Image 1: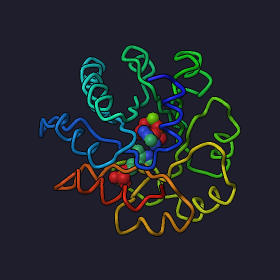
Image 2 (image 1 turned 90 degrees about the vertical axis):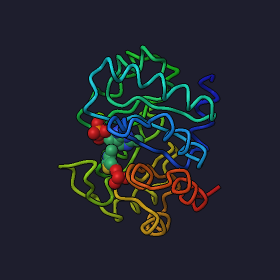
Image 3 (image 1 turned 135 degrees about the horizontal axis):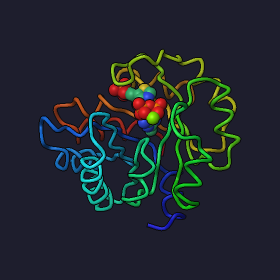
Image 4 (image 1 turned 120 degrees about the horizontal axis):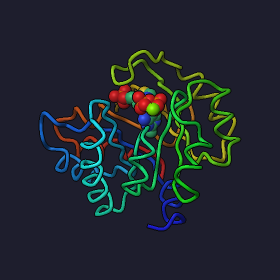
Length: 215
Ligand SMILES: Cc1ncc(COP(=O)(O)OP(=O)(O)O)c(N)n1
Ligand SMILES: Cc1ncsc1CCOP(=O)(O)O
Ligand SMILES: [Mg+2]
């Protein structure tokens, strides 16, 4: 995929999935196929329990499945892994590598994502030419991001009202029941974990969310 293709896919992306490695179930590959059939546009393996060697192995699976479905895939936190596996997207948070450092390490073609939790952080992400997308959240407190307080829908509304030109995603506690509130506050793109990873039917869960997101 060229970087122009990746950028176009990111602009069109609506549903972004972060998943753990599902080591206990041993079904990562099958799960990824199901989620991507359901319409996930971007997938990220986010599993803090993985050592770097295991992550390298699993990223090859993520890459192969995402590529088969024409989806983007993202490496979280580890720039060395992103570089070695040739990830098209790399994500960092406020406590991780700075964006400038990620760009210096990974070059100009990799799309860089950033987490934000405050208006000032969202504004900084929007102003930074090296940030290709940013996330706003967690909207609601969530067990998948312990220690990070909820930012609430007011921040989402504030960011949406600022009409960022950089693609941005709402994250944190989003599920089918809360989706209308998120859309009403002005988000057009969402990131989910449990809404798909904990679903009995991940394909159906992804599809149900994707169908309600804007075209
Ligand atoms: C797409 C996406 N959004 C947000 C995050 C969270 O990043 P960060 O704040 O660095 O937290 P950790 O994932 O490192 O726990 C993300 N990974 N992906
Ligand atoms: C990685 C991350 N960053 C902010 S919230 C979050 C996890 C969101 O998980 P869920 O969709 O299950 O609430
Ligand atoms: Mg991080």
